[in-house]
Amino acid sequence: MKLQDFHVEHADWGRAGDREALRSIRLEVFVREQAVPESLEWDDLDPPSFHLLARGENGEPIGCARLTPEGRISRVAVRQPWRGQGVGLALLRALVARARSQGRTDLVLHAQLSAVAFYEREGFIAYGETFKDAGIGHRSMRLTLEPDTAPAASNVDDHALPTGSRSEIAASRLQLLAETKHRLSIYQPALDTDLYASLGEMAELRRIATSGRGADIRILLHDPEAALRNSHRLVSLAQRLPSVLHIRTPLEEVDLAYASAYLLTDQGGYLFQPDARRADARASLRDRAAQAPLAQHFSEVWERSAPARALQPLDL
Image (cartoon, rainbow, N blue to C red):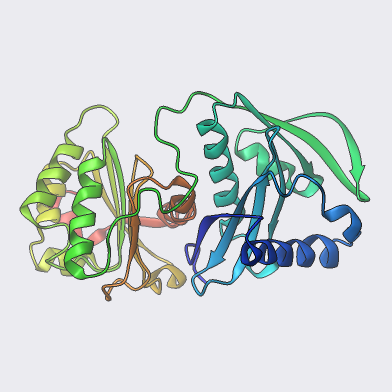
């Protein structure tokens, strides 16, 4: 199971298929696993609330959450096999984005005690005394929302890019580079000569690298030796701009076995290929909810990787 093998979508409680998917997750997590009485699980807030549904790559429902009309996040649930994979984080960030798009100034929620730290990492602050809800300890938490100048993306399809062929993937990759302002993250097992090497891509990469203070391009590459042997243009650019273009190589077997590739922009955009060798991808100009698990994965692998030794003779 990979961190990004899922997507988040809006779910309509009034549509039977969506409602059944949401109910199945909540019954499994809250009623059967946590022994919440089923009579307490359903309430009058379900029909008017904004619901999100996370689905695995095969379409199976794996997580859900809702934002009620009064601005409260609730019913956040992720099926056990998918916990720790970024699903809950993607759902939460999508609801926060939705609340911002509605012009809300704050959000509240009742967190189970075991989840308080999770919400604190996203800026929520606990207040009041511990209380019991359905026999489970909770804390009230609040998040103050700052104005968001970037377009919010509560629906992963709002800014979707075409990825039906290799040429469409290349065009979408170039469009994402053109949208990037200062920071870019690239995970690429192998840097083939047709990747990040066209005149248009090189022009955008140079622009990002020289965009001024805060410019930062990070690349995780499994096989830097091949890129060096092939005199890849990106290596040449890194040679000229080593202070802003950083290349690292994963060290652990689990990371070196990772077969996917992705591109992440500072505007919330992404391009993800489940198998870097195949012309199969999904992409969006702005979808921070879908980008979140990829960004989490990149950060974790980056921290346990090392500067590409094969490039050291070039003073990189």
